Length: 311
Image (spheres, rainbow, N blue to C red):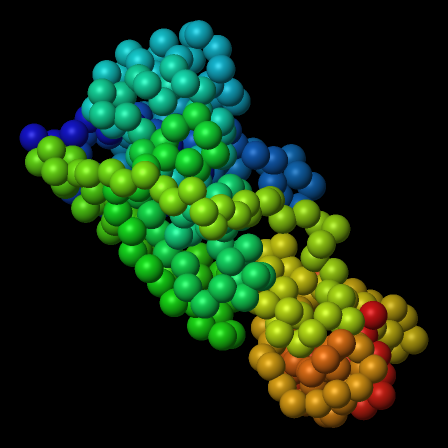
């Protein structure tokens, strides 16, 4: 028998899972997502989330409360009489009455190998830490932050130059297939759970703008992981003087390279930059107000030379 499902998600990362649940023939009673946010050049237009747009395309009721803490919201949630709620990057805290409302509980698709990288930014943090492997997990939600028992896992290698954006896209499709399989097993009463390990717990704190600036004094490997872990958003950045004016430059792709010199110093005409130890070569950058471009294209317009320095 198809399950009665409540889906809860907000960004593009959640959309493939919503589609997979619909394609599997489950009865999606409602979709919960974050309210429309101000967008546009002046911030005046209210833009619905990617999940809301997909739910409307599928003809599913959309609910976007600012909180789930009120008795009225909790009663409205219970009234859906769902078998299970599926949560993927929703963005709101689920209080205990919400967690306990569905007959079979709440499943969460989480983008890490728990208990490593519990929290808000597991994809970015895994790359920034230099991890070579991550994955998607399906877990049953509890009141603690990503502490619930795990039902399913699929691992994913992190390539040496892979960006957070590339890993995001790979994991969102892995996660959609994993949730679909978890629901199929749940239909057969064959979904089992295993408690998370108590050792190896780390937390993926939300990315703070204050940590996005590149520190060229760090070793090359750490600088490289910093750049790719923040690409494409919010983007690691540095400053350099171009045409007599200090300009901010977003760094989107890099690779490890040979070389040594004063941290931040440009070592050659291929945009190899010295770090605290070793060097990286910039591959893709973005000037303020511009589009992402290859480093060689950037150099044709910026006229940077060996000996100049990023700060």
